[in-house]
Length: 479
Image (cartoon, rainbow, N blue to C red):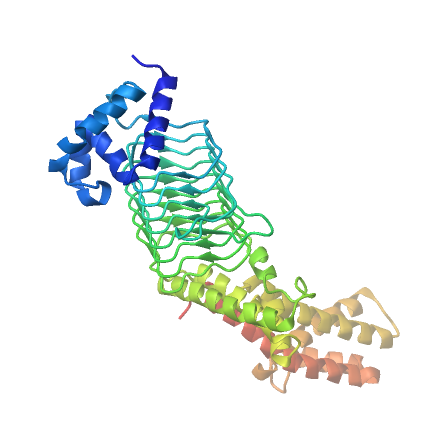
């Protein structure tokens, strides 16, 4: 029985030997097949040539090389009874320089709390068994060439079993392009960041998540690209923070997706994406995204840049509103419609259209606020009534309780009648004609006030009433 330290040194020695070999990936993978028959059956299920430098039938010619390595470096670890458990243990190791596991087959790889201080290359790596990167730190700064200009690259790798990237720190640019996650992938609490003078990015383009994908509480302080990604199972971005662009163009969400309580500092882009009906955008504060094109927030920047960003973001809001419309989710649809309208106002600046835009928002929340529109309609009736009451009382000589009550009653009725003047309630023969005439006599000396209130309300009343009816229709989905 060999010690854990010897196991650790064995894999490091094999890795070091592979570095100097003419075909490093081939030697590493051939040795695993030579020593562990179970690896052969797993690899041959895939495209063998992808992982091995020679066909399976030619292993005997490398047998002596494998025996020689084993004789010098010691006995390899025993194949575990449960190959899902950690087998290749690199946990808590500091890799001081650039390191490459590119093209190699890793079995039960454990990189928990490992520090990668240089460029790290897992391009084309095949991870068999349970894989751990929990707490790992990728601290390199200079990108590798030509592996996607990334400091840490998992490009075209595949994870046969569950992989954990919980609380991992990814600085600078990280590539997960064209990765196959054949089982669950957990990124909870991971951080994708960069230094101020470096270009950053978290690239997941063209990857495939065949099982659950969990990005809850992940922080993207860089642009996050999920273009052309396929999410076949439940996907979670709950309480995820997107500091820069979040791009999901051409992606497919084939199961439940949740962005509950996520934070977006730019409008997310879902152009030409297929969205599952069970999509959750609840609890998101979109004010951060709106600040990205706010003239007030970006007042020291070039106006052309602000207008351009607003135009692009209007398209993003419009696309989200269309998606929700197609799924017949009016509340979500109108939420993105309101964001789109506010973005148009930022784009247009101080224009007449912007003034109407803002008035539409204040009066009815863009046709969604039933309570708000009803409040404005009621308020204009109440203000008109107060004006008439004051005018009448200013002319009254013998004031008593009965007179005050009659003035208040008639003022409210006349104000209401003015707001719906098209019904003719205060005209000759109208239901409120008596109140109309009595109040008219009471305000005889201030007739101009009576006329002015009536004229203003005759214009405002139908407009505000229309907004009330419009919001009721939209809010309650009346056809």
